[in-house]
Length: 113
Image (cartoon, one colour):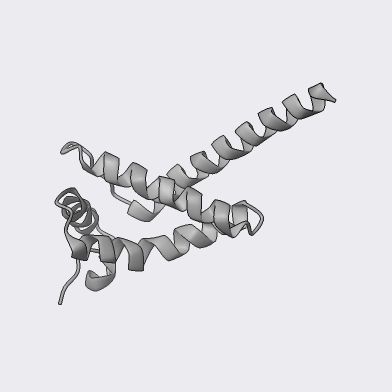
């Protein structure tokens, strides 16, 4: 059976990624499976490396990136040409948010000493 994602058509075209996003918008199980199979492993590896091999933090950040995608996909105007790149960019922003927050907390702890 053909899936929604780029893997099944052996091309990373805008049409295919748009089809996957349309499937996510409709909560189609096959679209979720394609997202999980085709995009999340590489996004997880990217995040895992960036967070110094902290598995729990990597899982949390990838989860937040997926939630951002689902929220974005709900907007009928949302379009993406490179879904993997979009997910990595969102994940990268979530990583930066995490480390900024951790630095603020560390600063408060240092000031309290």
